[in-house]
View (cartoon, rainbow, N blue to C red):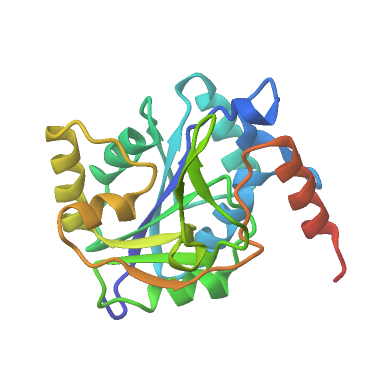
Length: 225
C-alpha cells in the first residue's frame, strides 16, 4: 500500500437519541462548527486520502450538502446510510475503490492527522484497530452479578480503523448470510479468521454518545492544557 491512496468511510448517519438533541448529533456545533466537520477537515487535507464516503441520514441530505459546501470539503461523496451501523458500512464499501479502507465515525471528532497517519502505517495488516485499557472494574449480570471479568484482558476499541477492503467485504457478506450484527468491523474480521492488530489508541479520542460527552469534548477543545 506504499504511496497508494485510501478511501475513507465516515459514519455519520446516526440520529444520536441519547444526546437529547432534536436533530442528528453530528450537526451539533462546537465553537460554531458541526463536529462531523472536524474529522472531515483532517481527512480532506491528507494527500493519502482519495475519497471520503460519508454515510448520511436520508432525511438530512440537504444539511450535509450545505455544510460540505460551506467548509469547502472537496473529497466527500454522500452515501445513503443503512438502518444499522453495519448496513451503513456495507453500503459505503460498495463504493470503495482502494485496496485498503479507513473507517471512522463522525462521533469521534478529536482525532489528529498524526494519529490517522500512524494507523495507516500498518499497511501490511488486514485489520488495524486502536484500543485503550479499560480503567474500571467490569462484570456481567442483570439484577445480580453472574460473571467476573478480568479488565486486564479487555480492550476499549476505538476508531479510525484500517482494513483490507476485499477481506472486509467478505466479512460483511458472511455476516449477512449468517444474520450476525456487530457494533464494529474488527469483530467481523475476527469472525472469519483474520488477525486483528491492536495498536495504541488515544485517551482523548472520545465518542460522543451522551450529553456528558458533549460537555467533555467542548472542554477538551477549549482547554489550554
